[in-house]
Length: 107
Image (cartoon, rainbow, N blue to C red; front, top):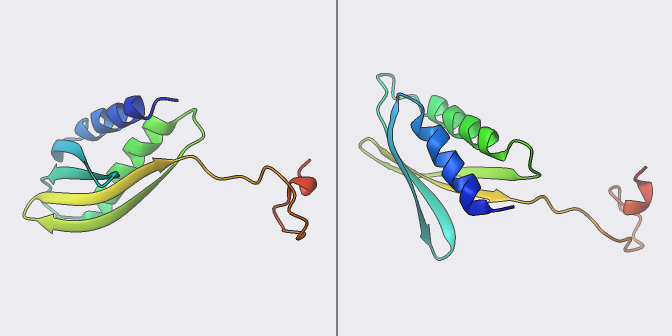
């Protein structure tokens, strides 16, 4: 699985929306941040979160990935989010503590 390809698809899906004029990804200390130029008459941040989640779901389709998006700041029409794609962690062995998600309980 190539994360660069997933990031590229994610940005392409974001730019397909009329309200988003520009989108880019910058990494600082290994943490990816997305910069989005969002121009909407309502200035609805809920709609922007929905557009981000929709673009992420399109780019993750068919892969075992999850995403996390956290709002960082806004400067006029530029919104900054901390966004990451990650593989979910699953237990691979029994530790003997009778955990509810123990591998022994899988069918």
